[in-house]
Structures are given as C-alpha cells and as structure tokens.
Length: 214
Ligand SMILES: Nc1ncnc2c1ncn2[C@@H]1O[C@H](COP(=O)(O)OP(=O)(O)O)[C@@H](O)[C@H]1O
Ligand SMILES: [Mg+2]
Image (cartoon, rainbow, N blue to C red; front, top):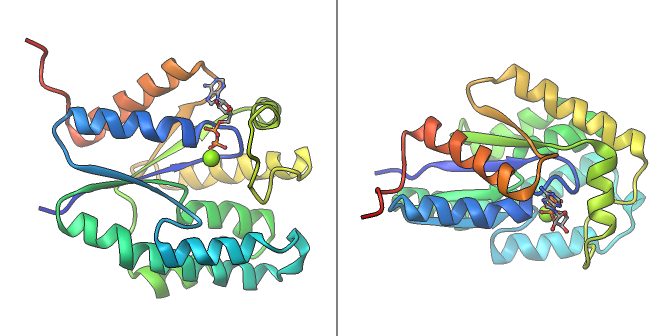
C-alpha cells in the first residue's frame, strides 16, 4: 500500500521544524511507519545542492537559476527518499516542499506560480502532497522567534518585514486555491496547542487515530 505524503509550509519561525517531530511521533503512535525529511535537502545529493546553494550570498543567484537548483534538489529528494518510502508503505512528512517555491520564488521573487508549476511538473509529474499544513504565524512573531533561535542557517531570515508579509499572503492565496489539500493551522498559539491542531487535522484527513490506551 502506498504511504501518504504530508508537507509542512509557512514562513520563518512558524514552528515547522518544531512540529515535524511531534507529528512524526503521533503518526507512529497510530501504528504507521513514518519518516521525516526536509527541503532544500532530504537526500545526500540534495543536501549537497543545499550547501552549494546556501554558500553564496542571496543576490548571487538569478531567481530562475535558484529555482532550477532547488528543483534539481527536489528531484533528488523525490527519487532517492520520498518515492521509495511511499512505495514501501511508509508515510513521509517534509519540512517544506513545492509550495515554498511557489511562495518564495513564484510570488516573493516574482517568477509567477505558473512558471514554478511548469518546472515542477517536469521533475514530479502529477505527484502532489496528500495533505499540506500551512503553519500561519504573524510575521513579527515569527521573526521574533527566529531571532531567539540558535544556529541560523536559512536564506530568507534577514529579509525585510514586508517581504515576509508578502510571503504570508502568498501562502494564504495558495491555500485558498486548493482547500482540499491545505489545512491552515494557527501557529501563533503555544507549541502544545499547535501540535494538537495538527494532530486533529491529520487524524480527520486520513481517518487515523492511536489505539485506545488499556
Ligand atoms: N508555538 C510556539 N510558540 C513559541 N515558540 C515557538 C513555537 N513553535 C516554535 N517555537 C520556537 O520558535 C523558534 C522557531 O521555530 P522553528 O520550529 O525553528 O520554526 P520554522 O522551522 O518554521 O522556521 C524555535 O526556537 C522554536 O523553539
Ligand atoms: Mg525550520
């Protein structure tokens, strides 16, 4: 039986990396084999592309070049990690996926979502996540969280507040366009509440739940 593919999306400091391990535990508690992964990366070759990409200052890459690098890494991620796992019945949760490209490069850098989708179809065909959780956080709150987080390694964290506001709106528009695939989660709440909302959404969407404790 084919596994399910769940992606976590949202701006910086929304809590994606925090929540992915909790969600993994929940799915595992439901008796399902599950792995967590991330983009850009998620396979050894894709992680190499990530390093190569992040190694340059932001304006170094032309936006289309940047998309092509990220899509190349995404192809590796799919071929090496995601598709084999799903084929073996293992569920996969990814910290970011194609909707990040749509929001960041498509809207944020103005390439347009259609262009992103056209390149995506080349690398992935008609494969899409079964469920995408958009962790929606107020821009200032997200940036505050990031500022207090150690080990900053992300590309977009230093960008202006207005850029992040644009991204947030982009995610809302993308989610509204595909209401069946997307669940919007209020990520302003405290960690335990957010993970409860995520568990509820996943439980309802896939009709799964952990066995009752005896
Ligand atoms: N619901 C929350 N409330 C308060 N702080 C949070 C919450 N979720 C995550 N954090 C903290 O905010 C920071 C950013 O979270 P992180 O999971 O790294 O976000 P993302 O991966 O979406 O950028 C971390 O230091 C994390 O501990
Ligand atoms: Mg993260």
